[in-house]
Image (cartoon, rainbow, N blue to C red; front, side, top):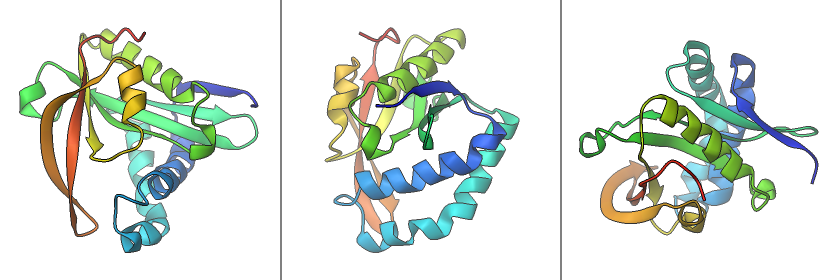
Length: 175
């Protein structure tokens, strides 16, 4: 596989991040989310682009991209302070997405490792992420030291109620 570098995102990465955001949802969640919702996602490109342009411009929280030498941005992760009261002392992974073609080569691990380094510099020692129930990629979190802590929440995505599971890391030092 060609060279992939992981680096901090810049404003110039907003379109690539939006592209990965939409396409990784379509690849990863086709059995979990309504087909109509996933089919309509590309129509939201401008909205996602504006969102990531704002996030990367004002740097409200860390964002890392995985950039392939030929294909451009193929993955990203972001996170910061916990948004859930019960995890007040934790850092939260807001998103981690990688195009399917690039799974299994250590890129997701590199994205997570860089994000965790920022979490440590922010003073955190633990982290968590919400994962859609029946997500095929929970093994990735488990291989990096996370465990399903039993907490759940119900979200509505595309007019469908979805259960999300909480995966937690008690250490930000990856195995």
